[in-house]
Image (cartoon, rainbow, N blue to C red; front, side, top):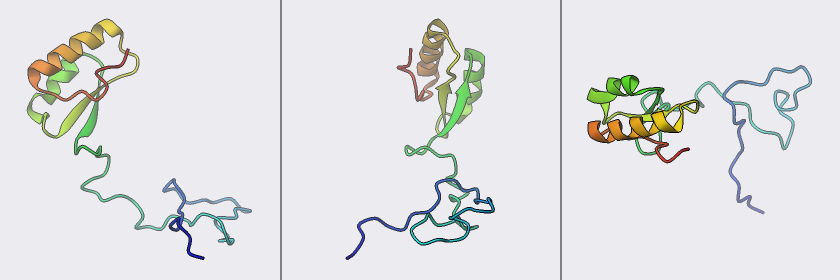
Length: 106
């Protein structure tokens, strides 16, 4: 019988370290421990599927930092920003041609 699921690895890249850990002791049927080479490629680390990197923005002034980097970074409005300020940030981002990932929130 061929398994439809590929070999599973621990989701976290941090190795398990408990003295009784079934994963560390490599028991049958457990997740595989992460190896040194299991991390993501340095060039694409933290990159979103659309090719942009996230930059968290709290106000319009921080948005201005992305003026020259709007092809590489996308703004993400912080969770604690009010609806009124969000509206200002989204409007300014459109003027500067900056992508905002969560422009519909609140």
